Image 1 (cartoon, rainbow, N blue to C red):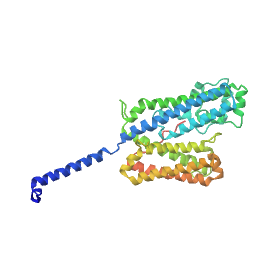
Image 2 (image 1 turned 90 degrees about the vertical axis):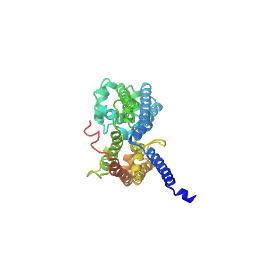
Image 3 (image 1 turned 90 degrees about the horizontal axis):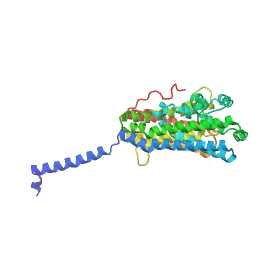
Image 4 (image 1 turned 45 degrees about the horizontal axis):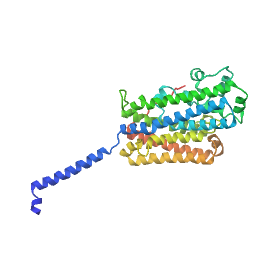
Length: 365
């Protein structure tokens, strides 16, 4: 029996069996690899489109609440409109990590989310005999429209917004409804483009398919710019770290005091694209295949940055208040955001071979 196992034909059979098993294992390993196309498709279908749809729906609800308020102003309706503004602004902030493609091509940020606003221009506009959505969209400057301009009017000190509406201030009511309508229309247009042709192209289908490398580059590049904007151009300047003198006015936060939520949602949006959904794919899948250590460092850094911002929410103060009462805590949160930015902009970018150029916002007006 032993001699039979040592014959050439038996050794060949055994070798063939080992080769077959090895090939099967190799194929199994290859089939488990996640491609860039897998990630782009999964994030488009499970993260980006649903987030744009959520923002479109909440901004439409805000638009309706503002219309109801203006048609018959009461304290309850004012509060409902304010709550709707908070929800819509929060949903918009969540998708900042993927503001590329149709959002930038249509210059939607200049219609929806410009900071700083020009309060003097906004008040001058209220002297116009009529204000329409077309006026706001076509003739008003970016610093006279968007969520922040609407916030300035809707969350005016005390009951002044309600007083003006109840007193029959037509221009005030027209400006409110025009701002809300322009915001809702712009976000809906972006959501429709992502649900339609652009989303298909980004996923790699259709005649104008975007290459998987360019798609992944956008998914990494925009979060790099976003963390830099938040860490250096906003918190860094507000704290006097990246500029000689502290300047809290760079923080995009008005009378509603939504700066902390805005910051948290932006970071969660970055986390959405990096981790993906529970049953989907994210940038993490690509990084982990190349370096599990780098992937874990990136995951940990994002969790730590979000935890730092969540602590602010438990504190209950606005971001501008925290800059005055607890600047050390804000500085620590900035350091956590910067730690995530460094890993993203060095290890993740290097591993994936992504080229970081200029932000789409550079030179925008």
